[in-house]
Image (tube, rainbow, N blue to C red; front, side, top):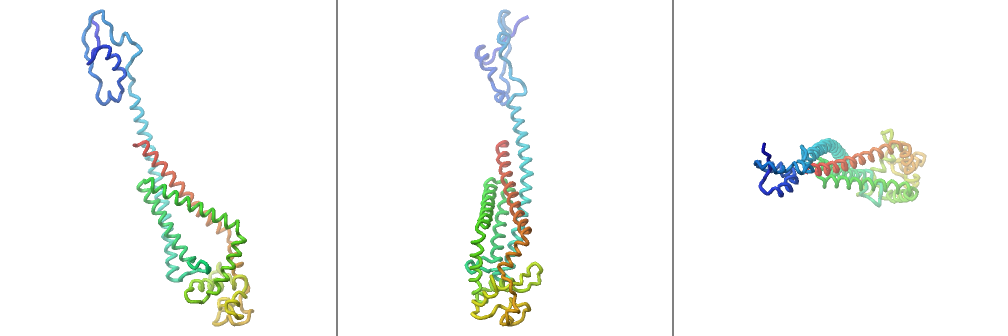
Length: 320
């Protein structure tokens, strides 16, 4: 029985050095190299019989196993990305709708009440209406960027949303810390500025300030807004404004035309600054809950944005 020898396109020596080193990528793309078997003399030695250290690569090839693993990782990354994507879109949609609501209230106050709640003479534009309009516009813009970044899976928009929201959060924390650290100085400055603003009461172009003082001093029909006060620190603050023993009619116990010209016994005696301050302290729990909810919403937004950003990067890495 004759023996077989493997002879390929080259010599026997070149075949022994090249065939085992061929990678499976080349084999898969181009197919196995052609091998021609021809009988040899009985004394010849087989190519594989004399070299037991060389063997064909195992099947399936390592590259194929790696490709299957990468495909599995890509599928998992895309699945996680889709889940985070829709969560972030829903969150930012609610964020955007909240901004629309705040903006609507601000526009309504600006059109119906003028510069409502403008008490500071140093910052005449610092009214409740203007604050609500600016806040609502900002929240809408941030929510819009978050929604587009989530739908488009855009890393730039997601990172922008995260950075802007982080800066806002840090500024809010800094303002809160500074407020509690300099409470006494803020109290003195606020009272001085409010007394200065009393001189603008009833003057042309200061409808917002006039309305704000009238609402605070009047016995409101709203139970939780019944301050029943007069002046900043005392009803005598109005004496300097009118240069007479007189107060606005909103300071009267029983409101009537020109009742501010009557005797002090018919006026509210409580100072408005301390009364409002005590009202805030009594409702400190509600104020704290509101602050915590605001912080929680911002932290959730930061978490969603960074999580989705990381998932987009991971999906791009595994699915490239």
